[in-house]
Each structure stands twice: as C-alpha cells, then as structure tokens.
Length: 403
Image (cartoon, rainbow, N blue to C red; front, side):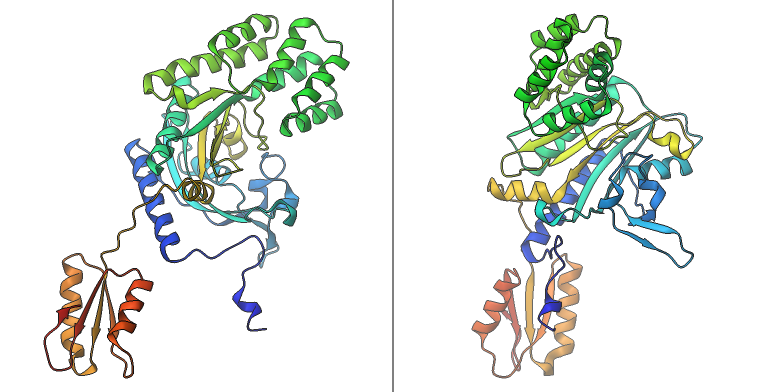
C-alpha cells in the first residue's frame, strides 16, 4: 500500500529538479514577452460551474471533463480550457469597456482523455486573449505574438498553420451536406485522408468549381497564386470567398511583422472547439506529435456571458513545448549559482548570519548542519545532486572557507 502511494494516477506526472527549473524559466520568459505586447495577467479558478464548459459553449465534450459536486449540489468541472473562463471574467469585469482588452494567463488544464491516447490529463497552458477587436490587425498581432513566443522559447524551426472556419462551413453549405456526411468529411480531414475527401466530393456530383475547392482541403501550404485561384473559384459562394479574403489580408499584415515565413495557409484546418468563428491556427515543430500552440477567433463566445466582443487568442501548451525543446537539444539555461553552507552545531549563529548576508547580496544559500560520520566528499556529492555550484564549510574551530 505504501509503495502504491508513491505513484501518480495515470495521465499526470511529477516535475522536479532541473526539469522544473527549466519549465519555470521558460514560463517567465514567455510571460515577459506577453507583458511587452501590453497583455495584463489574470488568474481564473481551477474549477468553474459546469455550464462554463457546456455543449452550448462549444468547448470540451462532457465525457472528457472531470466533474464533481459542491455542498449545495451544483455541478462543477475542472477547467479543460482557460478561454471560456477568460470570457466569463471579461464579461464580468470589463462589461462596459468599449476599447480592446488584452489579457494573459498561465495555469493547468484537465482533460480526462482515454487511456489509449497516451496524452497527459493535466497540462500547463500559457496564453493571451485580445478581446473586443474584430480587425485583421488583431488576428495578425496574435499570430505574430505566437511566432515570437516560440522564438523566445528557443525554437528556430517551426510552422504555424492558419485556416478559417468559414472555408469549411462554406463548403458544407454550398454542397448542401447532411449532418452525417458532414461528420464523415470531418473525420476524413482529421485523419489527413484527402484521397477519401476527393472520393466523397466525387460522389456528391458537385459543380466543377466547388469540386475543385473541396480538393484544396488537402493543400498544406497555399501559395499566393493558389489563394487567388481559390478566390476566383469561390465567386458565388460568399462565405467561402469571405474566408479566403480574410486569410489573404492576414498574410499581408503579417509581412509588416516580418514573420510570414513561419506561417502557412491550410484550408483543411479544423478545430475541436466549436466556439471558433474565424481564423484558427496551430503550431508544430520537430519532437512533438501534438500542437505546441493553438488558437483562433471566437466572435460570439462572450455573448454567452452577456457581452458582445469579437475576440481572438492562443494558448501555448508548455509541456509539449518543453518536450520539443528537449528533443531538439535546445537548452534552457538554468541558473546554478547556489551555495551549500555546511556548519558545525557550535557555530550555528555564525552560519545563519553568513547565510543571511549572502542572500542579501543575491545568492542562493542552503544551510546544512554537519552530521557525524559524513565526509566532505558526501557533501560535495550532495551539492552536485541539488545543483548547488559552490560549497562552503564553517569548521568547528576555524573560519569558513571555500572547498
């Protein structure tokens, strides 16, 4: 029984020593970048009323939520996603604000994934939300911020795929797809089975222009020429055309930021979050099978909480990003200038004063009383295990010295 208590439940893990130090440093660097862009920190509760994440909101399915009850019988849920909580806060605290609001956050999310998926059930997200701005400029700011966040983390090779909810929705409307056919199309796209997509489109006997637009769902990198061709084909389909024009405008503004080389248009991009209404995106790099960052525009989410405010945001999945950095052998420098101060009991007062003085000067100091039977080599090994670079002894009868 005691050994069993040493283990964590499936889907969660301990983070300690240098890994934890690297994670904290990475989070601080990213948070500092968000502050430079004018985003203000906000914290929301780890659990909320279940309705914050309900089917009507369009977030994680109920079966994947951790649900429980409070003393009054209210159904609560551990947050699977922080954006709906930010939307609730914005409606509550910035309900009368007519200008854009920039908020950033960091916290853990909880999704009760199937054991067969091999994913963590608890992960850390760090993100930003730009609320109350429906412009292409807002879309571009968020995506430029994502690129700079990944560069700040140390990545040099990554790609942000950008799509638009309206392209897929417009295809479904124009083709008059029934719900079951639409779901079949979603599954084909999600599985990257674009041959299956073309077969499905052929079976629908669509007009040639619409048929060709369906074939573009498999293009993972739309060139400017292909985008213009798609616009020509979409004339007569206003929802599709609107999505394509927005994507073109976005790439134009991103060129002002100088980040367009990291961004590609992917017309087949989908999201499991149904509250997205416009631009959606996800970031990938080597060493991570899952997105390291994801986000999009949600122009109607805040209406569920009583405020009309078109918005866009993103979340960096910190655990996935750390895994990718490790796989690519990109180091996060960990400050290791701590001191292990070992003293004999007779000189405890001197040792404490010495430690206080060093800490006042900015050093990290761990105090340890000398144990009989231990050697200097034992303390040297201990300092190494604790990542303390300097070792000092306050001897029983002599002044302290570096060893």
